[in-house]
Length: 378
Image (tube, rainbow, N blue to C red; front, side, top):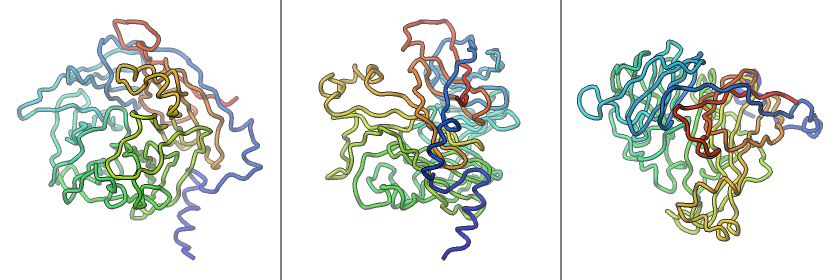
């Protein structure tokens, strides 16, 4: 018996319990039912799209792709700084879609092409971090969570070590998934393997998923978008894999095993369910996901046509579910599509901000609106 592993599982109980819920626990409906409440909204006096963002310690930073610009604002919506960046030259910053606000107000950012940047608290350029090898990633970013910090190091989804191809059908099985980066020396070391609890650890073929991860204290939480699983690793114990949570959605459609590599079924014959965002906190893991759309409904409504992608929202629910600290699961909380992507959640007991989807509700505004939201126990 691996007593060291058991000891680590016991320690993680201080953040989450790793035991499966018992029948008695799952019947504790009163303690596990939540509702989402809109407390207020704030307007940021800026007209443009939000193509990336973060919120931390009372300030938010959002990215506009068209203008290659970052905007920093406070909880009243007041713009504190805004900066457009050149795409060429010594101070270039190209598409910093992934944003992490640090405790001192400065920012680290990564483009969907993998370039890494340090940005001052007033959003002026500090420097680019150039690693020993180029990333092979050519997509991803936005409000996906795949950039964080731990123990003075940057952790990033930055595939490409030894020429690894992140589009290979067995990339997740055969390679380390993340890089731990020393910004001062511009060196990195690989970390985190997919655990056996994921189907992507096998030699079978499945739809290629997007990866997200978040660091909370000494623990790293990782998801692949089309599995209802959250994997936990202990960074203080040489990145040891500890446990996988299954948030057991009632409906989470999936096109299953493929007969050949490089086959894409989601968005052609049906639409897979997807973990859109997730936020581990000391009070529980918050998961935002969509249920997916069945093949029959997809064909009947011609949802394969890209012009109909915006109406996919009419055929699947957007849901919040919470994995509680004792491993029990919350109710499924329907989230209206007027609520768009969430900037950040650091505590389930505190308000947080999400982009208002003005296009969905049919309103045109001269500013960006964020809802101030709160999760409350029923």
